[in-house]
Length: 221
Length: 265
Ligand SMILES: Nc1ncnc2c1ncn2[C@@H]1O[C@H](COP(=O)(O)OP(=O)(O)O)[C@@H](O)[C@H]1O
Ligand SMILES: [Mg+2]
Image 1: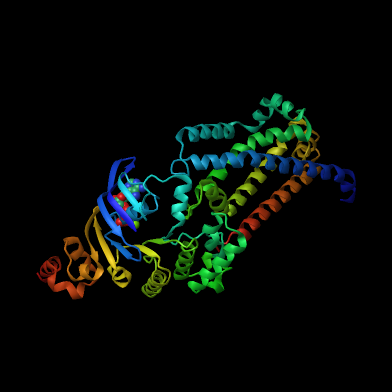
Image 2: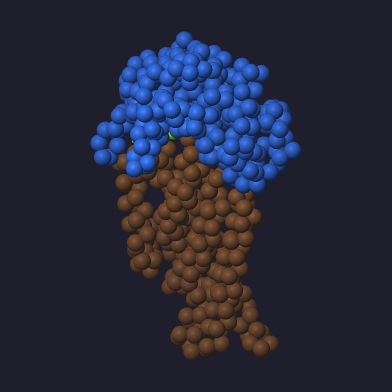
């Protein structure tokens, strides 16, 4: 056991760090793009704050097309774009770009769904007090759906965690990459098992953290 | 004063046009507690939502304090709404905001400072006897308490008017009386003109000085509450009165006696 950690501890630690950096960074950027997109999608929906069939339809297409491209294909297909943005298509930066592009439409969709759950009566009440549409978005819709948004963020994070395993294809490293390289290519089951166990533990931890956070900020119960 | 002149409303729904109001003429004087009564689907909510333009009329004009507000937009509309508080059947309290933050909401959206808003909110919570609950959340309050918070919130901007859409329909009878008495007190002490939507004659009888009866989108009768109750002019009003007090009015109600004859057979 001690021998194993002496030999592979540094590798697994580096893998954990790479995975977490990729996941956090792409989650952050996916929200920077997906959150406004999701708000815009919800606001322009039929029966929304400012319905606009044209904009809503186009946004719906973009979001659905984005969500339907398999990640492994997206990863390769957007290599020129990735190079344009971060100067390389390799390593952790080379993985963060496709992970962000893959997650942003997903984020837009779950943000839209969280916002759509907000009681229409509350939006009407806010109108009756003279709130502007911008204030209704920030002070009512986002605020009232915050627990749901947090749950959505936890799901996004876990999904990206899983996707980041495929980023090994572009030499980004990470736990998934270690599991594949050592387990599948070199038949070192013990390293693969350690990497997989680390993945399972980390996912559990972040999912529980998300659930816990959503629960403590929710004032409904 | 609120005046409605030949007001009509047609909803454009996916299954075609739907007329909710037609030829409504009303005048609500300052200081009134004006009741609008009618059965479900009569057009009461539509009517009251026109007054702060949550819905736009498709015909007619709405005059408030001498200004034609029918086409108000943007800032002008938001200013108007600040002068018209509103409370709802389901209370419509913000679940993720504390009682205090609910009451400060209308002040916050108008750019009032935090300190001034909080002070005003505490003042209003004292008025509705809930200042000790200011840091609670709506889910921790009873229905009656929630509606009193909503009343405090509706008063935050010191409005001249207050709209109440079935404000007591979700409350038990004892709580209903408390909330109605609070509304009457606010009308009396603060001079807030009230428009009270209800399907309940008991509610109208308890607090309204004038009532209008609405049926199928038309105002069928209007006058001082006592007069309408003593001497109803329309069939629908008589019907509503029968429902409201069946044991008192039984003798004069043809439908009820007819029903009883059938039952005797
Ligand atoms: N947004 C809407 N779209 C279409 N029809 C509506 C809408 N709101 C209300 N109506 C219709 O207008 C009529 C009056 O409704 P409402 O004003 O809610 O009545 P009340 O409050 O007296 O029960 C009803 O027939 C209702 O179905
Ligand atoms: Mg109604």
